[in-house]
Image (cartoon, rainbow, N blue to C red; front, side):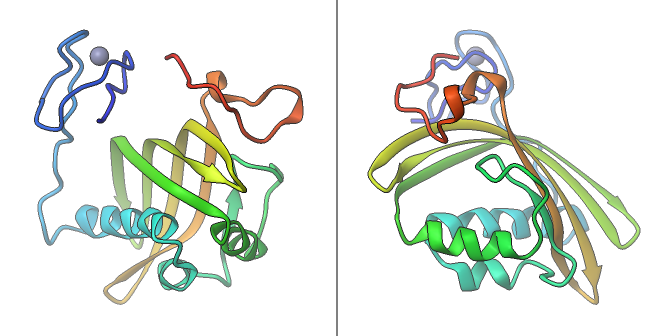
Length: 175
Ligand SMILES: [Zn+2]
């Protein structure tokens, strides 16, 4: 069951607006064939790569030579392509990953694209459960017909910050 990004109420897959607070739930779709739609599909493919635990699929969507990342899991410092190797390790112990993305905004700036969205994702890693909401900004570069991710910045909403340096949180979040 998806959740309202505004108030956290459970909503139905088919609802266009939240029954509790009235927030818009359905994205304004980017028309197929537009650069915005292509960029969105790369980012969805990247997140689907996490869900399917498929580092190879992820690597095809990323320009590894130029890649940098701020993650919402430690280490929080700026990482290069080694972030992808760490992620591949983590995917081995990831289970039951589900996600919803919301509030997409994509701007095409010549051969660069700037994508912003929010994501709620859940699962277990090494048998500890997490349920997080983060803001994601991604920069993509076009080469030929293909867009590849060159930078990602994932940061948790403050209410999902883990206390005392813990990397994950057990209790369900009540936003
Ligand atoms: Zn709502």
